[in-house]
Amino acid sequence: MTNLNTVNLAPLSCRGLGLRLGGNDLLEAVELEVIAGETLGVVGPNGSGKSTLLKLLAGLLKPSSGEVQLLGQPLARMPRRQIAQVLALVEQQADTSDAISVYDAVALARTPWLSALAPYSPEDRRIVEQALTDLDALHLRQRLWHSLSGGERQRVHIARALAQRPSVLLLDEPTNHLDIQHQLSLLQQVQALPVTILVALHDLNQALTCDRLAVLDQGRLVALGKPHEVLTPERLLCTFGVHAHYLTDPYDGARILRFRAP
Image (cartoon, rainbow, N blue to C red; front, top):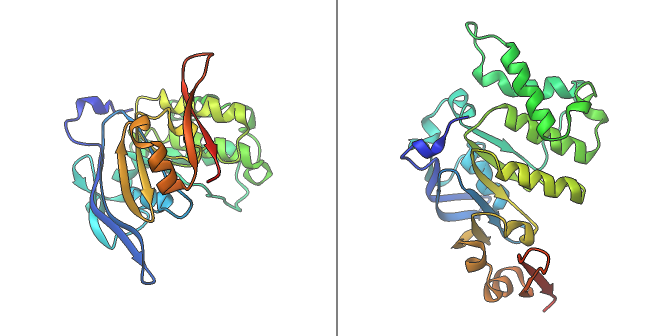
């Protein structure tokens, strides 16, 4: 994987980014610069634009305004193969009806790196098997995709993204469908990777483990900074509609949020 700390340019950024569909602004004037090597969480109520932002940053949607830059280059002018060698996106739902094995599904992630002069090799196989191992999914490698449970599919989705060996990883609510054990282990594994991560999260206590948080509300970026600086009681009431206060876990001294209905 590329060590982005040696790159002077921001790995991923956007200026004035917006998307308007059917007369509605799904995202409006978002200004964001992701710091190399950080885990940046994206939080907000349902419908605030989290998934839309990630799809725009990945180039899956064309913005109505503004621009996305990847390693200092306009994303819209980059070939898809070049983008895929740098950036991987794990969406909330990315199913297939094809009768494909788990191993073959993950191995497809190596496609951007293959050519006539560099066909699939033992090193590619090692990368695929390592990605499956990291997500506790190696034992599923011979299973057919459509036979997997929701949680198993989610882990394989993320294994496929890791096998792509990106330097920028976008994750849209990656803990969906996972039991609590795999939620905790997944977030720890992902945050330990030597990559730049942008992750949309629903659980605000999980979001507290990120380096920084971007808070979206009705398609606008309303706060950006350290988790405890942006998830204030005032912001939680204004944006999420809940009363909240911080508690200190006596086990390790971590601060956690407790919520109450208004």
